[in-house]
Length: 608
Image (cartoon, rainbow, N blue to C red; front, side, top):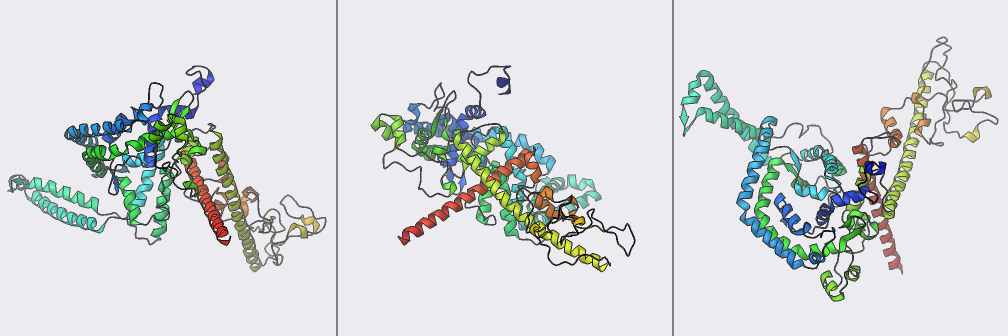
């Protein structure tokens, strides 16, 4: 784009736009993300999604690669012939079953050769924990390029491990681990003692067809497995704390990176069911590989019996959500950020029913065949709305990656609404912090003056520190400290007469200075500060209070940057967390507002 705008290279006659470029690159990926968002691909057996690389390849081959023509437009032969798609999925399931033994052998050897060295050097025999492929497709947002996704997801692994470590190991795993440590350590120590006596004992003495050296190696393996099963002190801290609140906070911290926070997870981070669902998405590398092998084995069944039944829903969804973009072709409508047609009303707290419901008992394909006009048939059926705020989160994530991008009027309206809500919330919270600060300053002034009185310094009597400026003597002027000048013969309560923050002690001699909390400054809750810059640095405020005054929001884990840095360049990860945090708060605000409106309407109708 920079080369195009500078005129050095002319790559396109039409003006290039970051959104159009992303839509072209992710034309097929955006449709697959939409399938996951709408739960169209039925790959669930029991309580788990079974997804693997071979299933992904089959979806691309039978659906995404087949649906576009040479002009990158969705072919009518695709969305009007669901039976053909079902046959392709069944055929792919049969071929997958024929090549299943070779696929499993190839994947198994590839995993061993790729990870064996890392397992040996890091001593983590189960491998590092990471997100499953199903979780990655669930977290990925519209128009999010792969490198942007990696930058967003990578920091979430540490937060996810912290959350799972709070639950600790299960009791039976810990018991098995301690038994393995005892048996492996005892046998290994005994064999080591025999080896120190005579090394020939380990080489020449055989039991059940193996020498003692082989048993020593097996004892070391059993001991290592036991150490991996027993939790460390870091995973189970001895300090007592409110685990319920910490678990919920840790789960919320993970959602700041993944942007995935279902309604049934909110406020229930301590629930074992939520932990189990989270563990299905985030697990060790070896466990994820075992589940992938299971998915490879179940792929023929999923393709032939489950996904083939989803063919009509896939074709109808592609027809209802496709959008024609000039100089780009057909893309999924969610990637255009058209909130007038595709925004998630349920995410805002509205209860308008299922927008994806069928129009009567007639399917979209039947409407097209009856009317003979695709556009008229599409207008008669409601467009499927995005779920869980996927479009809204994708918009802010795309805007974070491209700050200079100007979106459509509907997207600009959403951005403006969130910004207005953010500014109003910050204003209210800042006033509360400043009011608390001024009260603390008055208290510090009283304490300091009482301490100086004990030292023999005669100060003004403390009667009331909250004196408005209207009660100053007539004609009194303010000096450079913001207080009535001493030449007017007036000293405001809560203010020390010395403008330099020191007092001359007549009993201790000239030049003895006392540090004052806010010398020559009137700070009271009746006249709250408008800016934290109004508070001088010599106030003696606590560090915690200064941090609270300088915060742009009270959320420490998300918005810990000073308010002055909001206008400057800050870390992109922190800026992305800030945007997601305010989007979530705006969502909660809308949800509460709509619920209150519904309650008011119900009460009004009952009165009538």
